[in-house]
Amino acid sequence: MNHIAPKKLFIKTYGCQMNVYDSDRMADALAPHGYMPTQDIGDADLVLLNTCHIREKASEKVFSELGRLRELQTERRATGGDMMIGVAGCVAQAEGEEIARRAPMVDMVFGPQAYHRLPDMLAKAEANRHLHPALRRSVVDTDFPEEDKFAHLPAAKKDVTIGRGLTAFLTVQEGCDKFCSFCVVPYTRGAEVSRPVAQVLEEARRLADAGVKEITLLGQNVNAYHGEDGSGRAVGLGELAYLLAEIPGLQRLRYTTSHPRDMDDALIAAHRDLPFLMPYLHLPVQSGSDRILKAMNRKHTSAEYLALIDRIKTARPDMALSGDFIVGFPGETDADFEDTLKIIRDTGYASAYSFKYSTRPGTPGANLTEQVEEAVKVERLARLQELVNQQTADFHASCVGKTLPVLIERVGRQAGQIGGRSPYLQAVHLDGSTDLIGAIHDVEIIGTSTNSLVGRLKQAVAA
Ligand code: SAM
Ligand code: SF4
Image (tube, rainbow, N blue to C red; front, side, top):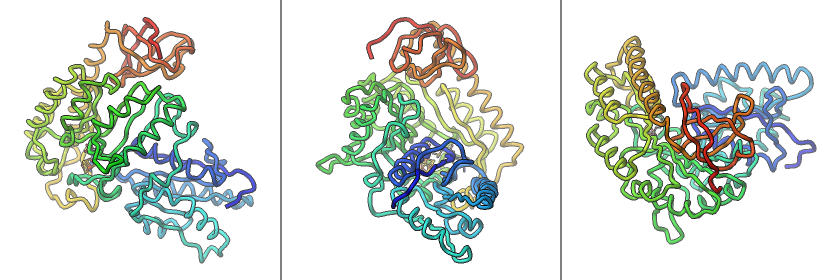
């Protein structure tokens, strides 16, 4: 494909960090075909919506966004220009042909397993543009490929991958075989697949060479990672952490999201042995009621979760925990909800995400009849969030007076201020020179604000 002038690509990303990573890979895949990223949608020759299916009414939100894009496309054509539109991600995977039918001005619809085929789809869609409008059809690709999509995606490049340049996401695992009864992920992202160890290490080395200091490994169930090494042996996330710790220049490792059932001894040992592995763990439990956990098909009890937390804290006593909670799962009684508040009190979270249950068509949960009233869900969510917010505030307050290593990443909002992250993923602000950006410095925590810590520089630590 030869383009005379560079074209502009605008990607709107919804949802999780895995989508952020995927959007960057799509930009990488299109760069050799002349598409350069723009932040201005009005300027774009190609607009991609990288959608997320996890939230309520996700599809309707995409259709209303497409309505706005159609107006933009019409305006553009009225002045002799054009704008192509693609819908990617989990809504595209779930709705496929329905998007093509309801929004025929969309040029491409493709699921998360098809990103490496994006240049081919684009070539087909560009050829379609020359057809009479009545003959045009959206190019739809929602197949799950046999081949390894990561092997076909271009390697991560510094400018598009790493935002501010010091931290980066790296997807190591995709899909899920757990089939929690509320969740669409196994249907939209497909079966659980892990990238081979050598591929992950190579991408991590490239990122480190480009100046990245902290990598967050991503996966729908990242601790189910079991990538093959050169001899065909499955390597778990714990062992992978030791291998990544050897990469020169890389100073911090994080991973998200984990499932309690995949938190094995090797990974817990890695937390004990590797200061490089940050003491922050996002380990959703969803509910504290064994009855609801069973109905959710989580395959663990609340006692097993708490015993796991004990083992993790024995290995790494300062581990900060984060979680996800769903309130109002069908059949959830007041007593079940009280069990959820109890597990939150027993665990003690540094942060947590919480959601009102909402039905996802096609999931087993959609067949459950005992729906909880909206007003009850609203009230439970508010009570849960109040408890978690208090725990977050207590956790921040417990840091005051301590000295924490902070990766200084950016200029602060106020003049003379810089900001970064503590090992526990808290935002930290302090006064200091921009020369400090890019390295880890010891910072004494002197106060807190709603969502962050306030610090004072202690001493420089060798980068
Ligand atoms: N794999 C992770 C795990 O097992 O914990 C979570 C992945 S899911 C993309 C992110 C979160 O969205 C879930 O942990 C759950 O709390 C929430 N979620 C998923 N489906 C939901 C639904 N139908 N209603 C409300 N919240 C939902
Ligand atoms: Fe969804 Fe996570 Fe359950 Fe998999 S383990 S089905 S991604 S909630």
